[in-house]
Image (cartoon, rainbow, N blue to C red; front, side, top):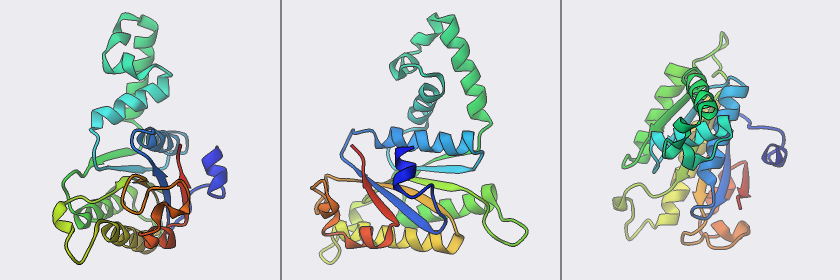
Length: 216
Protein backbone atom coordinates (compact mmCIF):
# COMPACT_ATOMS: atom_id res chain seq x y z
CA UNK A 1 0.00 0.00 0.00
CA UNK A 2 2.85 2.40 0.77
CA UNK A 3 4.46 1.89 -2.64
CA UNK A 4 1.10 2.14 -4.39
CA UNK A 5 0.57 5.53 -2.73
CA UNK A 6 4.10 6.61 -3.61
CA UNK A 7 3.70 5.99 -7.34
CA UNK A 8 0.36 7.77 -7.49
CA UNK A 9 -2.22 5.01 -7.20
CA UNK A 10 -0.95 2.10 -9.25
CA UNK A 11 1.11 1.18 -12.29
CA UNK A 12 0.34 3.11 -15.46
CA UNK A 13 0.70 2.08 -19.07
CA UNK A 14 3.67 3.30 -21.13
CA UNK A 15 5.75 3.70 -17.95
CA UNK A 16 8.75 2.20 -16.18
CA UNK A 17 8.65 2.34 -12.38
CA UNK A 18 12.21 1.92 -11.10
CA UNK A 19 13.30 0.71 -7.67
CA UNK A 20 16.89 0.86 -6.47
CA UNK A 21 18.13 -1.40 -3.67
CA UNK A 22 21.41 -2.65 -2.30
CA UNK A 23 22.32 -6.33 -2.49
CA UNK A 24 20.33 -8.81 -0.35
CA UNK A 25 17.92 -6.15 0.87
CA UNK A 26 14.79 -7.95 -0.39
CA UNK A 27 14.02 -6.45 -3.81
CA UNK A 28 13.25 -9.86 -5.32
CA UNK A 29 10.83 -10.74 -2.52
CA UNK A 30 9.19 -7.34 -2.97
CA UNK A 31 8.89 -8.05 -6.69
CA UNK A 32 7.33 -11.45 -6.02
CA UNK A 33 4.82 -9.94 -3.61
CA UNK A 34 3.81 -7.35 -6.20
CA UNK A 35 3.54 -10.07 -8.86
CA UNK A 36 1.26 -12.25 -6.76
CA UNK A 37 -0.91 -9.32 -5.70
CA UNK A 38 -1.46 -8.31 -9.33
CA UNK A 39 -1.83 -11.84 -10.72
CA UNK A 40 -3.88 -13.38 -7.90
CA UNK A 41 -5.85 -10.50 -6.39
CA UNK A 42 -6.40 -8.49 -9.58
CA UNK A 43 -6.34 -11.41 -12.07
CA UNK A 44 -3.98 -9.46 -14.36
CA UNK A 45 -1.23 -11.36 -16.25
CA UNK A 46 2.29 -10.83 -14.88
CA UNK A 47 5.61 -11.69 -16.51
CA UNK A 48 8.56 -12.07 -14.14
CA UNK A 49 11.86 -11.49 -15.95
CA UNK A 50 14.65 -12.80 -13.74
CA UNK A 51 18.36 -12.37 -14.42
CA UNK A 52 19.67 -14.47 -11.51
CA UNK A 53 17.33 -16.61 -9.41
CA UNK A 54 15.68 -19.93 -10.25
CA UNK A 55 12.00 -20.73 -10.66
CA UNK A 56 12.14 -22.81 -7.45
CA UNK A 57 13.44 -19.83 -5.47
CA UNK A 58 10.51 -17.74 -6.64
CA UNK A 59 7.94 -20.47 -6.00
CA UNK A 60 9.27 -21.02 -2.48
CA UNK A 61 8.79 -17.34 -1.75
CA UNK A 62 5.37 -17.30 -3.34
CA UNK A 63 4.32 -20.28 -1.22
CA UNK A 64 5.58 -18.46 1.86
CA UNK A 65 3.52 -15.43 0.79
CA UNK A 66 0.30 -17.43 0.40
CA UNK A 67 0.64 -19.58 3.51
CA UNK A 68 2.42 -17.20 5.92
CA UNK A 69 4.90 -20.02 6.47
CA UNK A 70 8.58 -19.35 7.18
CA UNK A 71 10.49 -19.82 3.95
CA UNK A 72 13.05 -22.09 5.63
CA UNK A 73 10.27 -24.56 6.43
CA UNK A 74 9.36 -24.63 2.74
CA UNK A 75 12.92 -24.85 1.43
CA UNK A 76 13.76 -27.76 3.74
CA UNK A 77 10.33 -29.43 3.37
CA UNK A 78 9.98 -29.39 7.16
CA UNK A 79 6.32 -28.48 6.69
CA UNK A 80 5.47 -32.10 5.77
CA UNK A 81 5.71 -32.97 9.47
CA UNK A 82 2.90 -30.54 10.27
CA UNK A 83 -0.43 -31.73 8.76
CA UNK A 84 -2.05 -28.30 9.05
CA UNK A 85 0.78 -26.49 7.29
CA UNK A 86 1.12 -29.31 4.76
CA UNK A 87 -2.53 -28.86 3.79
CA UNK A 88 -2.04 -25.09 3.44
CA UNK A 89 0.97 -25.65 1.19
CA UNK A 90 -0.92 -28.07 -1.06
CA UNK A 91 -3.84 -25.65 -1.42
CA UNK A 92 -1.43 -22.82 -2.25
CA UNK A 93 0.25 -24.95 -4.94
CA UNK A 94 -3.10 -25.44 -6.65
CA UNK A 95 -3.81 -21.71 -6.49
CA UNK A 96 -0.43 -20.84 -8.01
CA UNK A 97 -1.01 -23.23 -10.90
CA UNK A 98 -4.09 -21.27 -11.93
CA UNK A 99 -2.97 -17.65 -11.64
CA UNK A 100 -1.72 -15.70 -14.70
CA UNK A 101 1.91 -15.65 -13.57
CA UNK A 102 4.72 -16.40 -16.05
CA UNK A 103 8.35 -16.77 -15.04
CA UNK A 104 11.31 -16.43 -17.42
CA UNK A 105 14.95 -16.78 -16.42
CA UNK A 106 17.06 -14.72 -18.85
CA UNK A 107 20.54 -15.26 -17.40
CA UNK A 108 23.15 -14.96 -20.13
CA UNK A 109 20.76 -13.56 -22.74
CA UNK A 110 21.31 -10.26 -24.49
CA UNK A 111 18.99 -7.36 -23.78
CA UNK A 112 17.59 -7.65 -27.30
CA UNK A 113 16.70 -11.30 -26.64
CA UNK A 114 15.00 -10.30 -23.39
CA UNK A 115 12.84 -7.73 -25.18
CA UNK A 116 11.90 -10.43 -27.70
CA UNK A 117 10.75 -12.68 -24.85
CA UNK A 118 8.58 -9.89 -23.44
CA UNK A 119 7.20 -9.19 -26.92
CA UNK A 120 6.20 -12.84 -27.46
CA UNK A 121 4.51 -12.92 -24.03
CA UNK A 122 2.49 -9.78 -24.82
CA UNK A 123 1.35 -11.23 -28.14
CA UNK A 124 0.67 -14.80 -26.96
CA UNK A 125 -0.40 -14.54 -23.31
CA UNK A 126 -1.81 -11.03 -22.94
CA UNK A 127 -3.35 -10.20 -26.29
CA UNK A 128 -5.38 -7.22 -27.46
CA UNK A 129 -8.94 -6.01 -27.04
CA UNK A 130 -11.46 -5.34 -29.80
CA UNK A 131 -9.94 -1.88 -30.37
CA UNK A 132 -6.44 -3.26 -30.84
CA UNK A 133 -5.21 -2.07 -27.43
CA UNK A 134 -2.99 -4.28 -25.28
CA UNK A 135 -4.97 -5.84 -22.45
CA UNK A 136 -3.99 -5.13 -18.84
CA UNK A 137 -0.70 -6.71 -17.79
CA UNK A 138 2.49 -6.07 -15.83
CA UNK A 139 6.13 -6.90 -16.54
CA UNK A 140 8.52 -7.14 -13.59
CA UNK A 141 12.20 -6.91 -14.54
CA UNK A 142 14.55 -8.15 -11.81
CA UNK A 143 16.95 -6.52 -12.49
CA UNK A 144 18.60 -4.10 -14.96
CA UNK A 145 22.26 -4.99 -15.17
CA UNK A 146 25.11 -5.77 -17.51
CA UNK A 147 24.29 -9.18 -18.99
CA UNK A 148 27.55 -9.83 -20.86
CA UNK A 149 31.04 -8.44 -20.32
CA UNK A 150 31.34 -7.98 -24.07
CA UNK A 151 28.89 -5.09 -23.73
CA UNK A 152 31.62 -3.05 -22.05
CA UNK A 153 34.19 -1.38 -24.27
CA UNK A 154 36.50 1.61 -24.26
CA UNK A 155 33.63 3.65 -25.69
CA UNK A 156 30.73 2.30 -23.61
CA UNK A 157 30.98 1.86 -19.85
CA UNK A 158 28.60 -0.06 -17.59
CA UNK A 159 26.49 2.94 -16.62
CA UNK A 160 26.05 3.73 -20.31
CA UNK A 161 24.85 0.17 -20.94
CA UNK A 162 22.26 0.61 -18.17
CA UNK A 163 21.20 3.87 -19.80
CA UNK A 164 20.74 2.04 -23.09
CA UNK A 165 18.63 -0.63 -21.39
CA UNK A 166 16.27 1.83 -19.74
CA UNK A 167 15.93 3.70 -23.04
CA UNK A 168 14.98 0.54 -24.92
CA UNK A 169 12.68 -0.64 -22.13
CA UNK A 170 10.91 2.72 -22.03
CA UNK A 171 10.45 2.69 -25.82
CA UNK A 172 9.05 -0.85 -25.60
CA UNK A 173 6.53 0.22 -22.93
CA UNK A 174 5.35 3.13 -25.05
CA UNK A 175 5.07 1.02 -28.21
CA UNK A 176 3.12 -1.81 -26.59
CA UNK A 177 1.23 0.31 -24.06
CA UNK A 178 2.28 -1.66 -20.95
CA UNK A 179 3.66 -0.88 -17.48
CA UNK A 180 6.98 -2.24 -16.21
CA UNK A 181 8.34 -2.47 -12.67
CA UNK A 182 12.14 -2.69 -12.87
CA UNK A 183 14.90 -2.94 -10.28
CA UNK A 184 18.50 -1.77 -10.21
CA UNK A 185 21.24 -2.33 -7.67
CA UNK A 186 22.68 0.64 -5.80
CA UNK A 187 26.22 -0.71 -5.50
CA UNK A 188 27.41 0.15 -8.98
CA UNK A 189 29.61 2.87 -10.39
CA UNK A 190 27.64 6.07 -10.13
CA UNK A 191 25.09 4.33 -7.89
CA UNK A 192 26.55 4.69 -4.42
CA UNK A 193 24.42 7.13 -2.39
CA UNK A 194 20.94 6.92 -0.91
CA UNK A 195 19.55 9.87 -2.87
CA UNK A 196 18.84 10.72 -6.49
CA UNK A 197 22.63 10.89 -6.82
CA UNK A 198 22.54 7.09 -6.97
CA UNK A 199 22.26 7.43 -10.73
CA UNK A 200 24.44 10.49 -11.18
CA UNK A 201 26.36 8.83 -14.01
CA UNK A 202 23.29 7.12 -15.48
CA UNK A 203 21.02 10.09 -16.04
CA UNK A 204 18.81 8.22 -18.47
CA UNK A 205 17.65 5.96 -15.64
CA UNK A 206 15.99 8.99 -14.07
CA UNK A 207 15.02 10.70 -17.31
CA UNK A 208 13.10 7.74 -18.72
CA UNK A 209 11.58 6.12 -15.65
CA UNK A 210 8.26 7.50 -14.44
CA UNK A 211 9.29 7.29 -10.80
CA UNK A 212 12.35 6.21 -8.86
CA UNK A 213 12.28 4.80 -5.35
CA UNK A 214 14.91 3.45 -2.97
CA UNK A 215 13.95 0.22 -1.22
CA UNK A 216 15.40 -0.32 2.26
